[in-house]
Length: 264
Image 1 (cartoon, rainbow, N blue to C red):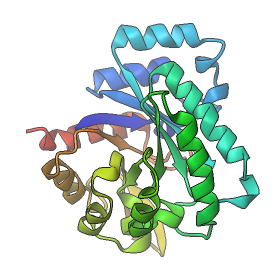
Image 2 (image 1 turned 60 degrees about the horizontal axis):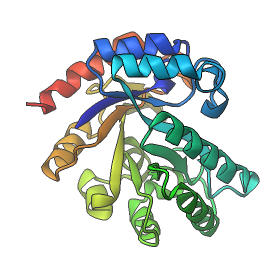
Image 3 (image 1 turned 135 degrees about the vertical axis):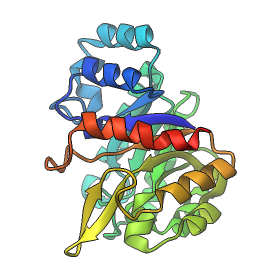
């Protein structure tokens, strides 16, 4: 498996800091979910006016961008069309920077909060079709409608492209779904993995550094290894939305240390 972290965990860092930390800590790649004050990656200076510097930085360090994580919510009528446009812009950027995957969602909530699965199906079909031939695969995350991964398995069965981004946290935390159930449902459709840990505190989710919560992260990783998964396991430390969380420098180092036990 390959080690990666999302920039959602370091919203105050410049790209140079992000890349340096990733290299120093032994990461294989980074996932981009915003850079500095810009959450919409296609508009970030690092990918527009300063792209030549970004390209050289990545080439010099040998670090890859594994995924561009969009905010496209394809089951949400309030952003109908706009989400497809966003997903397409992210696919274009992913092709430009050599990222293999783009994240899309049913809705923008980690838990089920409604959404139109037929709208999602139609819009995802458009996104998957747009990505053909680009070398980029748009992946549907296990959040929103798809915290029930049986629904996602059925949904993805209608597509020859695409795949699943398994966020291990969400089906467990918001649908009481076991690792074995998720893996049985999704199997080879799992193309990418998000990891984070948490507990329930006073009725709310409270995020913890890896291994300090009760999400079955260890079981998930061991099951992935057993089933031959060799893709990215990406730490999604949601500090951009939760400023009280521990700083990225501590958390990224801890995650790299935690994951070493699985590389034996």
